[in-house]
Length: 232
Image (cartoon, rainbow, N blue to C red; front, side, top):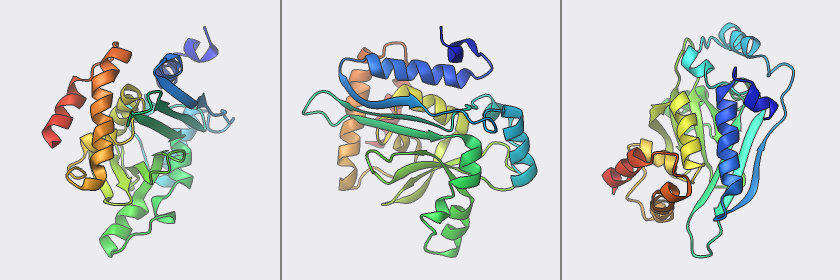
């Protein structure tokens, strides 16, 4: 048993480790990376991290958010289906929550085109990114002052920022079930489907929901399947 598995104070790290082990051991996936980043002395202290976000950034985040805390600077996975005719590809690049709040401002990359969009982008902090696929899609949390349970917005260069029907802890849990399959976030957004440019995304999601119940039978894909059917 690893030190991570023994440390029950950080259950999301344990869940993440299990998900990455599932990915690495799956014979039908070609895995480029599935690894934890390092733990810095400062960011590894959960009390210090949450006290700092509350004191310096007016983010008194809830116990639910705290329950999904991970100490690593980043957690990264990138894989593709081993079948040459497959549309299935997945990636996630999680950033430590404190680093997201302090360093990963969406407005530094996408300022916005009008006052409302600029105000929104000014409050969005990137916590999940896709640098390997270069899709330009990323998940953000809305760090409005006083927030305890931040809204989650999915940013797409084509559509802009889309509010998700999901919170931060549920996002992190669903990420592990989907293994980061590209586009799963659209299943929790109002917009996205219908544009011809989304056809490859839909193909990948259909394939995920066709093969993942067989590849990863310990997980329940019924809600994701229902969401895809609602959007078709």
